[in-house]
Length: 414
Image 1 (cartoon, one colour):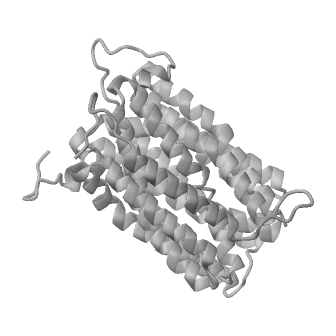
Image 2 (spheres, one colour):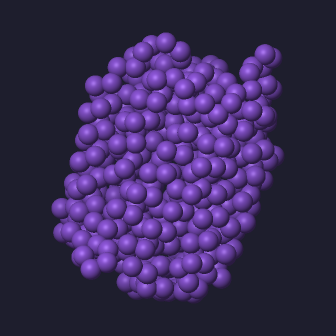
Image 3 (cartoon, rainbow, N blue to C red):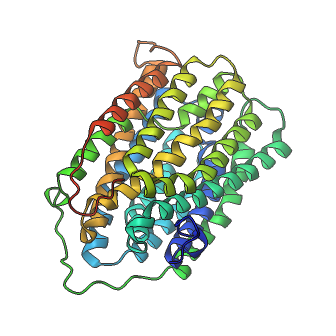
């Protein structure tokens, strides 16, 4: 791959598979973001579901699907095939979306949400391994950063479409209506189908390497550095509840539906702009430094969410929240491939993604309890889950800064 005068890989010359996966993620996020970000408002405003139950729905949907991430990652290693497992996963998510249209109870919403997450569980680990296999280790941060930029670029477009629909259907309304939500679900089916086609037609299966072993599921084989990395990431993620609570916080602080959609678009725009330089920076100075910087930004922003007194403050903080994602999210995925043998990348991504998904359940459920309580207890109020997340982010950042992984294997540290 040719380089520019500064020695940085040109993003325009990234391999075909990186482009295909990125285009697929772009289309799927166009589809998902116009629906999923409004789902907590649909549950709360239309169906009258409590904050605690919303946290339970989000947490269980993520956690139950997460076991598939381990299996699908291992299976992609076992079959030495990444592409078609990812295509199947995207197909499942696309097929789940029409059920949001007919949902008239929290149980039906949960079923559709769970099906969507099953698709994500099937596709995520093989997809990430396909990206890692298609790029050199010195350009891995750039590749994952580019993928995240395309993903969030799709989110911006999806949110702008949602904003336009809400503007024409219920301009100025403080709550979401059933007809508006159903209209968005119907529109979302088109980019969901394009996402499946983009990967099926655009990506190529990489040939298996001769003599490469077909692995068994074994955490020991992933190595101590990787397992230590998982512990540190787990501390962070326990305080990283569903972003549904940020949407609810924005509404609680006074933003109407149009304001919330514009806020989400601002966040994704910042996320997209930071992802490529953030990933490229991790190739040059090391992954840990970039991750620590991202987690510190997260802690400060979450303290801000807890202290905010007005809707515009939530908007500004949510836009800055994109800095954390742009720096840390793609970089942590690049670091997974740095820490494990190539033959076990699918299993490693499965384990990593499953850990995050499993912790989404206690993180989101606990956030709901901290906010509004459970049973006869009223909780600590809307600010509590954000203070909790900030404290755990600081603890994880400290752990990552103090950790000194061995330089064996493929770990690249500047």
